[in-house]
Image (tube, rainbow, N blue to C red; front, side, top):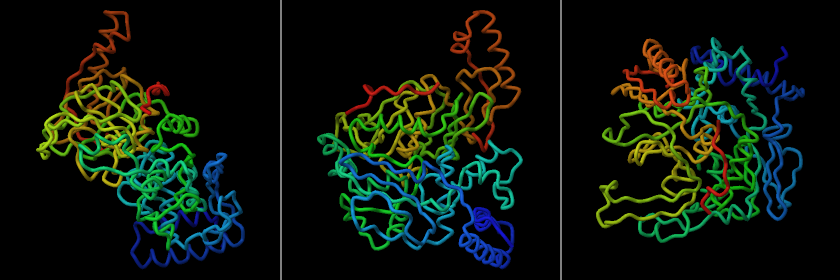
Length: 471
């Protein structure tokens, strides 16, 4: 029986979801044999030109290469700074498949969170919501339906790439302080190690990076050393979050290589700890994980709009907010950097001292709580930044304590969790205001709608100005 290798991988990933364990084992064994046979016979596999692209700068060795003929053998030769290339690790097929799906989902703005090679609840939620938004009526876990697999461009054979540590990576590393006064006295909040830098650059956990590089001491990495890394899209260039002035270039590259759907409004679901973006047709176009305030007293009680943003922001430490700190009695200014308390990017709301922002500890997103803001990984914050604009409505969804809708939405928009009757009333009020002023923009700004919001499972672009980035 002939079987396409990509089909075999889809079957191996999702084939036995609703079957008994013994049936799944038998099915998986058959799929593995068939898949390997297809591979050996040269069955075609999908590839992405972006995924295995080579990025190189004179004087800095920055290379990326996906696997070639086999996940267990060296791929074609690439431009490397070292004459000795590490051998690709022998990885479980399941891990490669899971990682390829996570990379594909993130590249399509449905973030599974930090890449770990484990298709857990966040990954399954991202896949389900991508399918519901782009392929209504399709079951994303149906192994016989290739539509979603093909649309996402899941590329298992190139899930892993090679990366050579550059001088610029080393420049982004420094001594990281943990006491507030020491942080304020520092010139920058850098990565604590090359391991820390590489993990963030490739959106991955230390555990996965270690599995991809068995026998490598990640605590003792050096410039010129080649590692195996998740082959994320777009593959990182020499521009790095940890370098002054490089964030703007990284954002421009992200916008040029990634799809940029129009966003009409955002929702923040406090129960699910998720930020979602919707277009003007109420279709979900992006999903990001976030941390929410640790204490209910700090939850927002109103909706908001995006008021401002800052690249590589300073952070103002206020002793009145940190009740556990007793020996500091005046505000402190913490310098910018990837390990700044608000990360590399701030998107402020018109709620005092509240915004969506990056974070120095990506592994804790969705786990630990904040002092009132919405924390994201640095890379997700940067991606969200490319989709937003000043004045964009942000709808808060708190199923346990409904929040009245208090921002203006254009006619026809149905925020998830808001009843159709309430939206129709909002449309009428919008039309009446427009007729009375003959100024749609004034009507938009003047509109206010009240109403309780139900629980829901779903809950212009920013201009890049190099002068706005802190150096």
